[in-house]
Length: 146
Image (cartoon, rainbow, N blue to C red):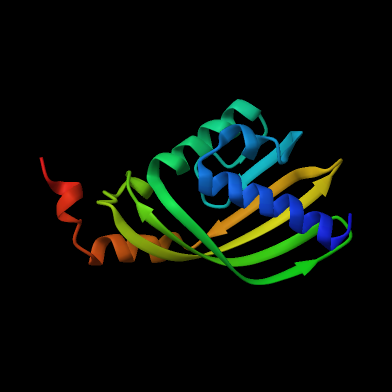
């Protein structure tokens, strides 16, 4: 695949994440995709229903996600994408009360492509940075009322 083709697929993938559109998001993955979030207790997921569940948890924990590209490196059928993410922690990310607080964190993807989709997605995210921000910032009044 060309870098432009990989960019287009990953762009649709990020747009589906931002829109919390599980159908569109799953449509960017091959039927046999592997989804591996490094450090997640569930490790690499291969079953589409498990991958959907992981993304639903992400949607429950974060809202208004904005991905800002930092750099991208390409291989024959893979790319490495370094980004910064800004989102609202609305659920309980990593077991912490989000409190509708804004967090910004580094995100690294290594994606392999086949047959017009992402066949493997390895994700490294700065969990320590999110935890630090949620521990340091007070929850919003709106999120804690009631």
